[in-house]
Image (cartoon, rainbow, N blue to C red; front, side, top):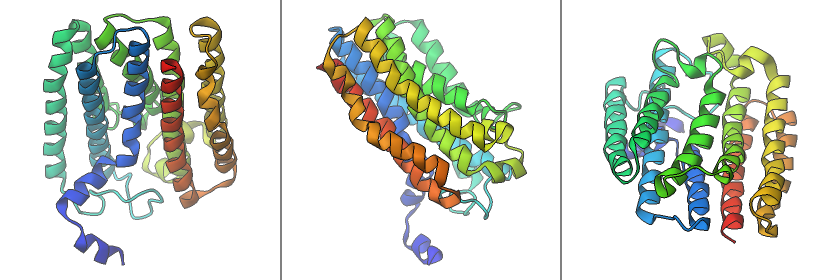
Length: 299
């Protein structure tokens, strides 16, 4: 059945699969939230926001390509994998093709990023270069972050703090406390996507020598980590309300709380392939929360 489906798929379908479309929300949310704060402060620049979004999407895609390539080369992705199908492990795309795609993706990102440098400062250039290098170092290089318990830190910093604050900075040429506080729930909920992924793959990663935080500290720690990140994301709303914007609309993300509670129950009860659904819904929660948060700031 699977082989029949693959035969009907085109090369483009394989590349779309390799880009992991569901994970691209991680790039979308921080740009939306950062831009909403820029608009709130009267400093919104549509073209800068659009270019920042494209660069964020490309960095996420490039990171996914690197992840696919090096997880395959290191033997982490095997036939025993319980997560979504990977194109290199399935033989749909060759390592040589993936290497070229990585160079092209990050190359385009760098060129587009030069516009953001032009309208801002050299700080943007440094942020862009570090972001690209971090995306590569996530699974590649002599000390791959994902293989040494630093994947969660990487995601929180680059898809939370850097993504949100950076988007605001290229439009406002400034960093405000509101942008910093807003980046925390964005980063926490996006990191939870990785937390579920690592929780699901804990046994396989352990065998492959991929020492994620889940592998290092176990399932109980990972479940608590998920809950803490979720709780912190909603508590931040009170900080924003009482300190920066006393509008009831700031609490719009609370509308997503029922889904958050459902996900906490799922992480404690679901196992193996069931967690693929938890992963999908966790990504959706980060998007829903982010959109509601952005709307609350605008209103």
